[in-house]
Image 1 (cartoon, rainbow over the protein chains, first blue to last red):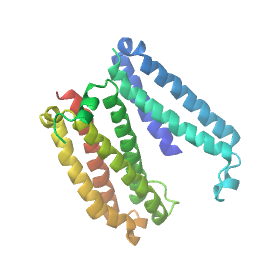
Image 2: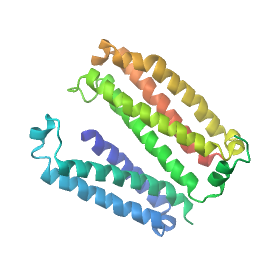
Image 3: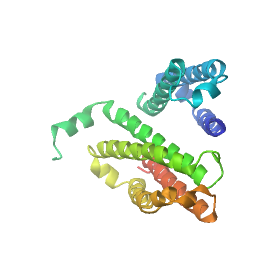
Image 4: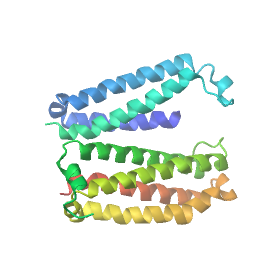
Length: 95
Length: 151
């Protein structure tokens, strides 16, 4: 988890720098807006996990079955991050 | 597969085909580089010390190789419609050489190291192997990013 925070920190800082360099061009880009929105949703998703599933994690961690809700959060997280990557790539194609 | 093939025309003319394929290229790279960071953090002894290397290596290696195959397959599809343009690009040529070095190191040396019993410790030898692995893969990544900027 600490590694993920560091990576997200690096992504956030370089993202901020990229934004400062070309804010006008990027602000009106539809794909950029979707990307930012989905990033907020990623945060909400993580928050739900932290509040609802993390406290009881020690119980289901060592058993073979992960709670259904946690599985949903995991799949949603993967889907959201793929959308973020795709939107980031597609930003260059809208102009 | 001739230069005028119908399939390649679809790739060339569709507005979204190449960006979508490039996105899958990025998913593959994510899987590969993420796995490499995790394996090398463990190998060098810097992080994830409580997880036995034998356990980690077996499962993460599969993800890494899956990501590599996805990246190579989609990369080929991006290259196919416009080979002349990429062949003339210095960053692309560097990337292909770096890719050969990285894959060679990965399968000839790295694979044996993480499966050996010596992989549990963060010895200087393991740190060296970890550095080589990370450097070689990130060189491929940076060269790939440079393609768009070197014409």
